[in-house]
Length: 297
Length: 91
Image 1 (spheres, rainbow over the protein chains, first blue to last red):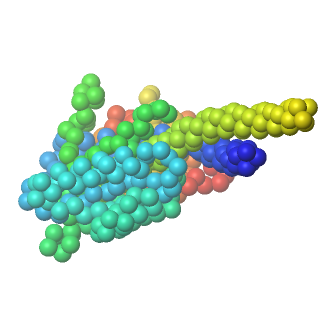
Image 2 (image 1 turned 180 degrees about the horizontal axis):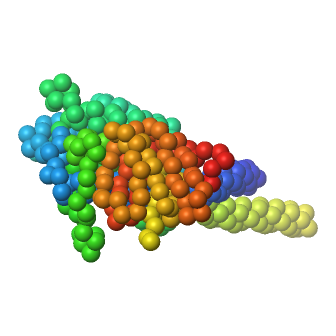
């Protein structure tokens, strides 16, 4: 009986130390999330300026650029999967991976082969475990992607896109990432990045017609400079949103874990008390019956 | 007379925004100076120096690497990958 009590005490102690860890991780995620959201919003002006310029050129200059040309016969398709480096974020990586698998399945039905590019150690290990080939992985910065990392990812993908398929290039680029809606809601999204669907003078700007620009040195050169920047800023926005989502998911998961640990501690405390009580009861009944036996003799 | 509304935007932040009388920037085929009433222009920028002359005559100087510049109805947007405002100039 005494052994049972000891087991309960042990469990309470280990759950308590787990709770401390969960609490600490929750606080860390909470303190980082503000910064991550700030990064999302501070990348906004750049993205807006680039988008506006791209749609201005596209509307007036008659776009004919490799990055915007549809390739209906594309057989190889790049999929950029943006997951987390670490777990402890609830279903965050799992739901991104589920969306990716769905996309890969859909592409396979169309007779297209998916070439995987993966961000985040968790997502990479998922594919490694299943012996799936990955063209390239980036790990270590999933919760705070740097500018250099973004440039490298965008560079790699653009290069793959501009390489002919016969030489190992790809014909399309899809991005699977988690959109940060707010602190409570983050939804996994699939985005077809390349070839670019040119937005003809975005509908919300109709009140302000885009002017006829002079291009220097020429529309083609301007477009050449603009489009890779546009792609890069879109990829950056995906990475930043994914980072904010990851932190929000982690904070929520760790909060739930802390609550669960508290519940467990409460249950174990009850059980331990019960065990102690029954031990005492037994002892008393032993003494009493002993005394009774003595008195009877 | 109207003024230019200038925005200098780097990929991670707005470096500077406000009203100005003149902007000069290193365009692909030689530096351009932009005053009020400039025709709409979309230009590629070389790495170099952007100067913005403010309303009070002070000048903001910033080193930029490649980017582009758009002018449209007295709105000047300088979009660069990264920019560094020089010490001593108005920030």
